[in-house]
Length: 149
Image 1 (cartoon, rainbow, N blue to C red):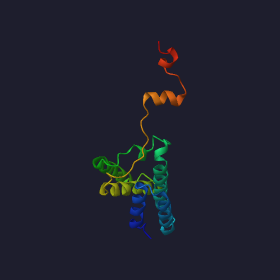
Image 2 (cartoon, rainbow, N blue to C red):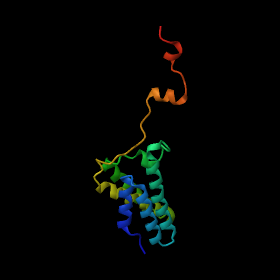
Image 3 (tube, rainbow, N blue to C red):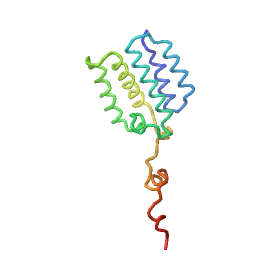
């Protein structure tokens, strides 16, 4: 049985809108409908990773993760990412797990391209300014050390 695309699209919509409890239920429904193949396992792992990264997105947990860096409103970039992911899906040098993994990401890009994301709260990590870096490290700034005279 192929993966129901309607369930997957709903899952994507839920994680974008940060409705994680419902997204977890949808992910479980997707898992129940999947056959046990390497391709499906890769596809599912990608979905699960998307959910985890989106949940952690506001906590500065991994600023190197793809989903934390992508601009969801840049349709041209999303199209380029989709094209790149599809090239990996078609590449016979990749195993079934990897091709399933990239297929999930390509599908996510397809859904994002079609969505109006202008009202979606991103809660992306803020780039720290110099003062917050000093405070975060517990270091005293030079002005504080010298004192004001």
